[in-house]
Image (tube, one colour):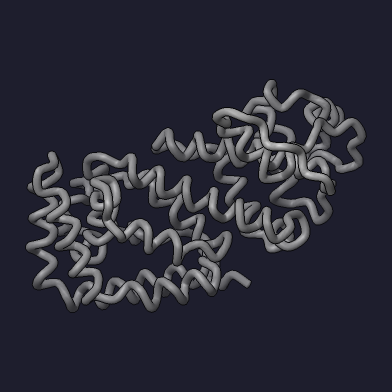
Length: 291
């Protein structure tokens, strides 16, 4: 396949994602059915200039194909999947407490080995993984304040079930080179340092029936194995102190110092809660491990 020449000048987010898939043109002949039988709408979407395609259209007529279809049309995938990636990035950066239909289903689709092995070549897999990693880090870097909802956490956990990116993600996050990284690190660590009823980041009156760091879908074996080796109490305590120092002159300093101070005597509970977390990430809501 002959690659198109890169256009000069800055790229938009959508242009960047399209470039990963060689700027596939609109698709005039569509043999792939639409999941909810809206075949005419999918054909019309495939023939539409990508600049005019909306997140709503992708949500209605394409993203469920990525989740459920056993056979995807390659050129249609190369045309519409990059737009889904770009829309996912924008949704993640909105930091909304409400789930986004396209974003949630795209991450569900990316749990399928079929997409990675059959629909992307090695270079595309590498670039998509890099894009997922970069998006998550951008979201973490943007965090300010100890948001009790931890709106970034569902994205983090969902990525754990998609591709082997947790090593790169974790290492860059816990380099603690920005206030956002430090804030998210302390949010995460606090749920390992305190029981829920004593956690200063846990909203008063909120139930404790679910573990805050858990998720309903299992992580991949490779990502889980990395976290198991990396998430140890001694290293966590060192990084908590480092994060608190980074926030020393920031608005979050008071609570950061409290978490770092309380962490010193929390070695035993950290060990217990880390094990609970790892067990939770090893299986989905039905108790089944990700294959």
